[in-house]
Every structure is written in structure tokens, then in C-alpha cells.
Length: 124
Image 1: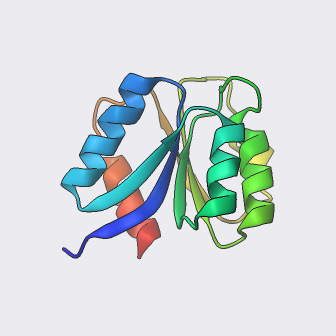
Image 2: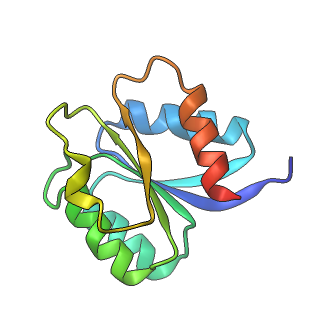
């Protein structure tokens, strides 16, 4: 598989989870960058183009839904996957943005294969 560099943005405030995702993605030849807040992620989007973002909903400051709204305004071609520990998350809150994956992934993630499959699908 050809390496896909700097295509994924991980927006996750739990560093252990973010680093696990980063290593897992690197094993699949996918480059990524980590932002621990929505504000930090938006700053990265102003500097670089990403094809996909993995987004936690509960973040310090700007939440994940607010980030997706603003990120979509900056880059309407970027796709998003929700990765959250919030059981209260309602996918209809963001259904007006067609670039959000219909699959929501909940933490703790016990099987990463479905998440990787969705990432690879959205990158093609």
C-alpha cells in the first residue's frame, strides 16, 4: 500500500488514545497529526489540508460538533469520523453535513478493525 502522508487529523484530548490511533494508522501507512483541542485543530487546518478528521465530541473549549461545523466551512471536502466516549451523542446534531461518516465509534474501542476499515474507505 502506498503511504498516505498527513491526511488524517486526530482531534482527541486523551493523549493515550490519540497516540494509540497514531501508531495504528502509521501501521497502515497513514500519516496523521494530533490536536488536543478544537481550536488547535482549526489552526492546523489553516496551515494544511487534511482529507479526514477523527473527532472526539467532548473536548476542552470548543466541542467536537462546533469544530466540525467550523472545519467544514474551511474545507468542505474534508470528511469526519466521530470517535467519542459520550453515550449522549446524537448523530442527528450533525446530519446536515454530508461529509460526516454515518458510523459513530464509541470509546473505549475494543476492536479497531471497523474503524480502520471506515478510515480506508473514506480516504479512497
